[in-house]
Each structure stands twice: as C-alpha cells, then as structure tokens.
Amino acid sequence: MLRVRSLRSRAASLLALALLPVAGASAATVGPIEDFRAPVDNPGPSNITIIINTKFWKLTDRIEINLPPIHLRMAGVAYVTPQSTGGPDLVSINTIYGIDANPAAAGLTLTGFNPLTPEVIPMSPEIFTDEDNNEYLGSVAQPLPISALANFMPAGADLSPFAGADPNSLVYLFTTTNVPAAAVPEPATLGLAAGAALLGAIRRRRVTGRP
Image (tube, rainbow, N blue to C red):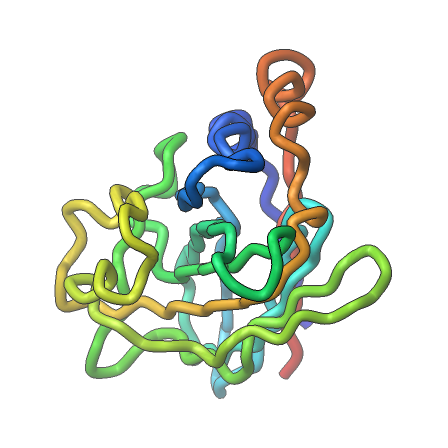
C-alpha cells in the first residue's frame, strides 16, 4: 500500500475564496484553488490503482486512478461556481488534474499528461462526501487537451496555472453539481481567517493506493 501526505500553506486559496459572491451579486467562478499536490509512486512491476483522498473544505473527495510503474508529482486545481439553477444555495465544483510542472515553486503550475500514453488514467467518477456522510456524485473524467480547457469551463475562469504548458498535453476535468454552498466557508469568516490566523494554515492531502 502506498501512502503519501503533502502539507502546504493555503493562504492564497483562502483569500480567493473570500471573493465568493454574496446574495444579489452576479454569479462568478472562484479559483483556481489548489486542490491536490503530491507525488504518486508505483515502483512496479505492474500497474496499481491509487485512491486519491482530498480534504476539500467541509468536503472530502476521492478518485481512483490507474498508475503504471512511474514516479511523478500530480496536481489538481478546483473552481467553485454558484449555480443559476437548482436552488440559490447550490454550487458546482470543477476540478482539473495534471502534472505538477514546478514542484519547487510556491505557486502551482500544471502541465498535462502524455496524450498518446497518459501516465495516469482515472478509473472512477469524483465523489464528494460532506460531514453528514451525504455523497455528491461527480462526472467521470473528461480528458481534454489544455488548448480546449476554456471551452469546457465556466466563462471567465482563470486558467493561469496552465499558462506555458504544452497545449496538446492531456488533463482530466471533473464536474460535480448541486453541492450545498454550506460546505464552502462563509466569505466573511473566510476573509478574516485569511487575513490573520490562517495565513499560515496547512491543508493535508493524502493519497492511498492498493495493488
């Protein structure tokens, strides 16, 4: 079994989330928010299934991926958009997974997987679970070249983490709808936290795998 933990500051993400729209404001996508950043390893000789478990605010999410014998640093970014349908207190979450292009940098820069022989292949939809164990089933992975990402994301989404990446490389997009906005910190509370005590906050990410 493979277990990897990564620890990192989330101050920039917290400040970004403080911009979530309030009642009466027009819907706007918040992000990119660093969702995952950790090495994934398979010493071989055969493929293994990795389960990525991520703590995402008041939610946890999980995805199963197939990993050949390889060592790489995988990364993911998330975007949150208030929904215009389904109710005023619901949001959709888009997550995009690729390769950490610069592990030494504080900010996240992603590139994609090999489009002909992808190093990682998702094997399941993304599933979010809240604190009451309610599950929100997302889409199966949508493989996309980076050059096409903007066509499948909410209008105005900031895709700067992919600037400079190979436009033909492959990333995986997941979409989960009808997620309660209560699972995301309230903007006012988040803004205070980001400006003070949580400037040094650390989020944990765990990866577990099984042969």
